[in-house]
Image (cartoon, rainbow, N blue to C red; front, side, top):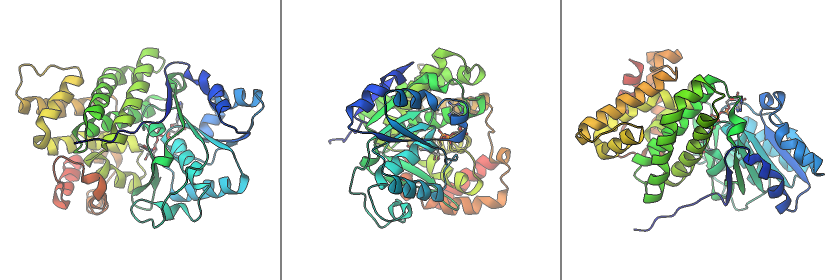
Length: 385
Ligand code: NAD
């Protein structure tokens, strides 16, 4: 059996890797650059770390800040229209997954016609045919891995959908942990568990390969070992560095192997209740893994070991139970509510959450255990109780 592995062409990782930005921009024959970021990052001066060296080198930059967390489709439509109207040569995304996803969308759809809606994965009718503008992606959270994936996630009325194509891949990703030092504990926790979920789901995915396994296990090691410190002491350079590498590796892993049940059930939580993507994944992670445990005991034993424990004297079954318990403990230790009630969700919402999750067929297909409608309801119910 052969496997296709896709990587972003160039990545810089590590502390102060942002220093490579100017050289990379110089490689492209560009003049006018749109920097897409969120208003908070502009206000705290983080965006200027990207813009100032470019301006000093004579590039014309414009900062676009109409970015909100978990961006709705309308925000994407507005940005794409703006990009089409203003003739940029390059787009640079600076921020969490929300800013980076919008940057990818703008960079590619600037050279297409029609609405963003036409290109959505579940309901769209148009094909992406052109690469569009060069894209440089600079994450400021350690979570989504968007800098190395080929999707843009958009919030719809009750769920989420993606625009997906390899043309959405960045030309250059710069993953500098120094940019994450200002992340508050709550966002560090949610985005960090998001990255852990990417690695765990990539590892148990039906599409996992030797390469994605290596990436996923190393991501699990780094994140499990550093997330508590990153949350309790955000200034810890080593913890921030480990989280940054962990989310980058997890992004590469899930881009190649895909995510599964946790994400399928998390999307409706984001869509219907506007819960941050990382929190949605975090609250569901132990329950989905607990439910599908029997279908992937050996893999969960490996995850347990990668989390820093030893399964040497345990059966696969015992280790898989302990893995679920440790995932739950990790979520609780970083102060994320461990039940849906903790997010003020009422029991009568479980039916509509289930109805939307069932629609995520492409994602659910990667689960090692088939998850039917009744299974999905049971998982939400367990997470509720
Ligand atoms: P985000 O981009 O929504 O940012 C969350 C908050 O953190 C914002 O208020 C932002 O201002 C703040 N923030 C970001 N960096 C900061 C910093 N360094 N210091 C202080 N504050 C900072 O959060 P996210 O979790 O990174 O992204 C979520 C989005 O990414 C969702 O829409 C989700 O669906 C999507 N996503 C995309 C992919 C992908 O592969 N494209 C994968 C997973 C999730």
